[in-house]
Image 1 (cartoon, rainbow, N blue to C red):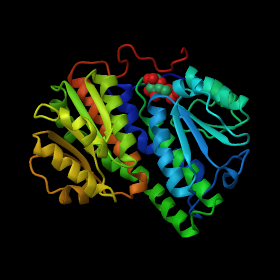
Image 2 (image 1 turned 90 degrees about the vertical axis):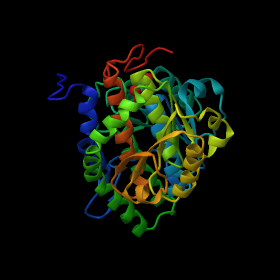
Image 3 (image 1 turned 60 degrees about the vertical axis):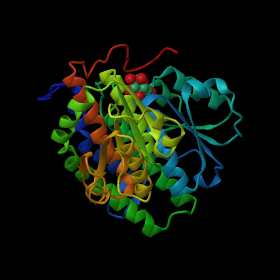
Image 4 (image 1 turned 120 degrees about the vertical axis):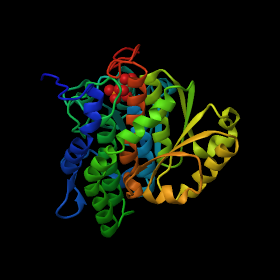
Length: 368
Ligand code: G6P
């Protein structure tokens, strides 16, 4: 394999632009488009209907994918999920009942803490299922079953296309779990699959926001701190947005659940602090708008990532927005990953930072 940037300035930008294709490829591996049903090509060593709970363990961006997965498993399949970062989980001595399942998410399949957590779960007689991008990796080899992401090799140190492919796989698993547990009717499954089918096209549409995002990046590049807010599945996206920005631009950034604003971060709001709000026009939208009003009332600078419906309904003046296409709320985390990746990328490039090789970071962390 020879890495090739093609016409792109960085691997990261190339990988951001590949997402329509690789997400489409990953979904088509797990979805039978003709029947409108999810169809896992592998046999699981357990039955979703027999699980009392699922543990998800990962690091970094893969952990945030897992956190979105938790919302999906709980809502779609009514399956309670415990999620933890691997470096905590591995030493926490969490009691696990024999025969439950543990799911590991990892691009490289080599992250030391994630692997150690897997081995702990194995010793506790858990069924081991992993969502990995490198099929020959140690985590893949030591799992009972591997549900691969088909993102292709990811070269940029900060994960982009692996993240959206992890989300794609987790959504399919949540749907499969919902069907097995009887929490999802055939019609509901078909409608979720329709949303899945629309995703690659929506990603291509969303990529057209790049110029708007680049303009906003000029503002972000001058900031010392940035706050990201989101509710529901946009909360893990806020965490991921903040992680991407600090990894690439070295600007201090924090992601918060929008409802937690009043419990601390509101003290930081002034005219110097950009607040990136991830808010598709879903059932949480109005609540997030009231959080934006709280920010605006204190002179905070809002950058709103929303859809066409949301941008008309915000009722706020003097805010900057990036408008993405309207989409079903279930796939919003995949669509909104695009502007948050582009925002971090362009901020880093404007600041003269190396977007592919940020300082002090490694693509695969095989030491503790
Ligand atoms: C490193 C990378 C991140 C990645 C994390 C977990 O910190 O820089 O992009 O999310 O490791 O890696 P994994 O290979 O387990 O997904």
